Length: 277
Length: 272
Image 1: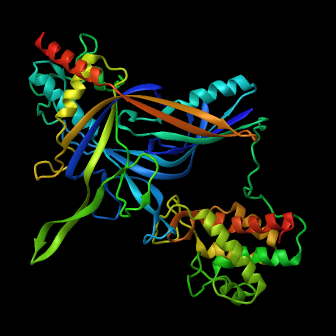
Image 2: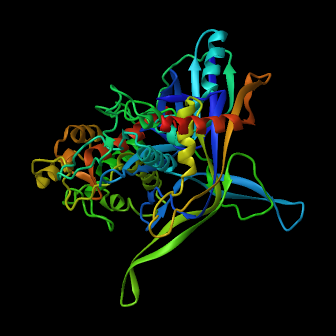
Image 3: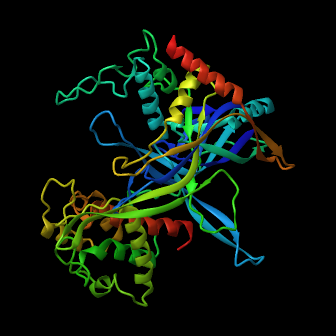
């Protein structure tokens, strides 16, 4: 099985966003008409009950935000196209089996530029057989209704609910009704840019600034995302096993973060100069 | 020496199996919860691909002979952040919790499983009670009951037919109670894949069975348990018939032999 090892000194681009309603759905569960987000483990926590000292236990479901990397890729491709650069398209076939042309003008086939001159998009995101250099991930999201909840660990609190929709009615009765899960609120995601050059980093920052959509139903008003803040950090992670007498040990994680404002501005300048030249 | 590391899976690891290798170490997913991860494609109109992922706890074990080897491997394993495919999208993320180092590596022996072996024949010496129980087990499906008819369509004319007909009912008879325990155990072991049928022939049967001849042969062997067992063991006709109409792959021969062998196994162990 393939593994990815962590960088002890990683450079991370943190993007803080807000969405009124967003549906990054995974699919419907068996024997139900509801489309769900990718469901993860249950998160258990304690909270103070009625302002007293006694504590109660409760749990909430964690969900995974899908599709961030795909949106970022499309945004960066659009920026490159507007700057006059030739980049990879997401398809590796020119024509489908019905004879329809899949490749738009200005793009080349996915991975066809590796042998000649590798495009920026392929350098960052890679293709089949060529690994990319960035990791895009977001902490799992939950909705915790208790205000006095004691939360530990990396989770994001948002509002999660399901929306019922009716697709078809007959004599006033719904024939095809379905529901979709959505979330709303502030959230953030991280991009690991440790092995990126300043030019690539500048391009990624520009792509993150134009990050405006996520999930299903953009044309009907869903999935609009607003970027509030972008931060470049240097994160150092140390994992140490604290040994016991019996040969057992507990793994302790220590994380420290420093801001890198100079590198942020420098990367944007390098990218804009690169376009002009 | 043996090193074990336990961790929590935060986002699902994409793999077909719950046992795999990580950095030449054996990794097992404990209490696995299956998740289907879909991946849609924008470039052309196709159905979204789906991948199988697992959540739960991950346990990694490493066996070696010296302490420096353990130390190096521990460093290597602690630095792992993602396992499996699509790590660039945040899948397969893990966090290590705890671990321990064993002083001596356990000898890797295969544990003897308590599998039932189908015997070619019954043991030579059997007490009368066991003989009665085995006879009851071998003949119980050839009589009409309120729940089902005879599984060879013809009811046998043997002794103690009325007791044989009660094998689905609640009764105080010790013989019936002990039989029901083994019958249910054998049914649980053989009924794995549900495949409904409208007749008694299994999905694999090709020829037609002469039920009258089969019933006549079984009736003639009523007095001798050893011969009856051998007849069922060698019978190709009973192999073609199913034990349950809902499970069209489980054969009647295997079901009868399994009950008899479970009884014999418990008798030889001394637990019956």
